Picture 1 (cartoon, rainbow, N blue to C red):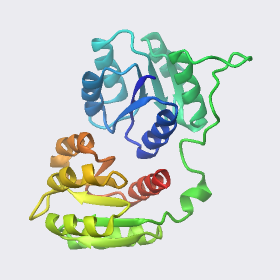
Picture 2 (tube, one colour; picture 1 turned 180 degrees about the vertical axis):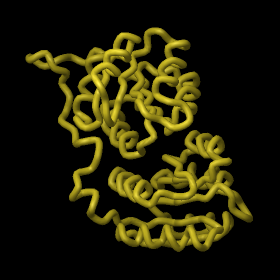
Picture 3 (cartoon, one colour; picture 1 turned 60 degrees about the vertical axis):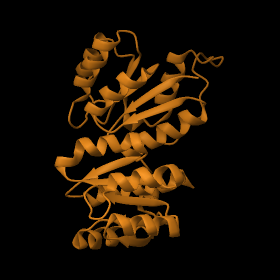
Picture 4 (cartoon, rainbow, N blue to C red; picture 1 turned 120 degrees about the vertical axis):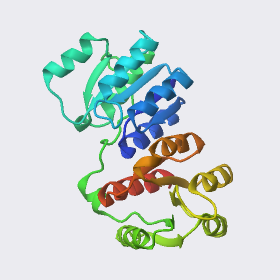
Length: 267
């Protein structure tokens, strides 16, 4: 079918869209920030881009301008958590295919993707898409437990303690490693659902661990934990098989939402 690039720093949005688009037969590429999004666009030359308006490192408008400098014709759908009519008009005047609110859920995004890719329409003229859930989990779903086995690999004992409490509140079973060698052994022995990998660890660093484990543990989700100075390296880890990364100091609310969404997708 088509190659579609999703550029959004919200892991839930990226994963949810990816699931439905892959099921529809599309090849999906993702990026968690603006700078990496531009690089992925250059590398994969997608047929369509779904672009978050508010991104780290390079804003959505900056990404838009960079993509338009490379391609004048690739359709770009803008997603936003909040919007003003004048902002929508500005994007549309500059050539955006659509300007959509995340608050309206996933269905309008999928409908516009179908429309832009020329999917046959229903009798009423609307794209023939399957109804999809909201981009954000419903409150009762967000409050529920996640479950699953999570390996925390980090040499910082205090951070492991904080992460352990956070994940225990999600009903996760937790195992821990304080260096890369232990992480390799534990991951292979226990086959966790999620591995949280600190990039800087003694023995073997997180990147080395990811390179070894990602090809052999395709059912496991790998998420990198990074300091600010490691963010470029963390973005490179996405190409090596990590599904996301989170920067220190870790936002426990953000981490919890990402883990819950990922476990849901892996079931």
